Figure 1: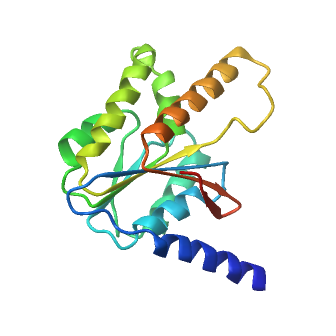
Figure 2: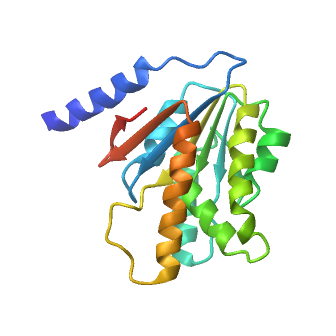
Figure 3: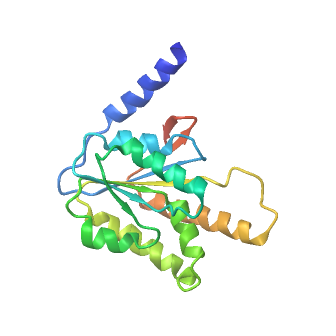
Amino acid sequence: MARVSTTRTKTSSLIKKRSAPSKHKSELILILGGARSGKSDFALKLSRTMKPRAFLATAEPLDQEMALRIRKHQRSRRGAWDTVEIPVKLSQWFNTKGKPYQSVVVDCLTLWLSNILGDKTIRKKFPSLLKDLLKSVRHVPGRVIVISNEIGFGIVPSDPVTRQFRDLAGRMNQQVAAAADEVYLVVSGLPLRLK
């Protein structure tokens, strides 16, 4: 039990050490981690005092299990967020609707990449879509937190399509990390600041 409270204290002190961005300065934060590592919870904690705030969900309810996951995430935000479901067109949203927000959470870039690769009409445009996204997030005069899965820790996938996805996700994460003001890795609910 003492270990749990120590963990919460460390996470709380990490959040308290951060200062809110000025009203006119944009701030980009990347949060990486594995599945169910606590990435989304950490992102929500980093944004809890900043309003107005938006939550951009890239997941699509393509099956019953994913629909249940989406509903669970929606309940955890309890109406305190403007939630928008955007499977692909993140840049357009930031360019046209991002300015009023002090905090925006994008959950998650890995699903965004999957959605793009699943659409044959835009698949080849991924490099320019990522470049546009990194430019457009700076239209928010506050904090933009993007969440992405770190999928490169596992074994090399046996099929070429999965290897291509893993490689693209790794390159995407590197580009976002290079552009970000801060980068965190979350493992078992514990955030580690990398940048």
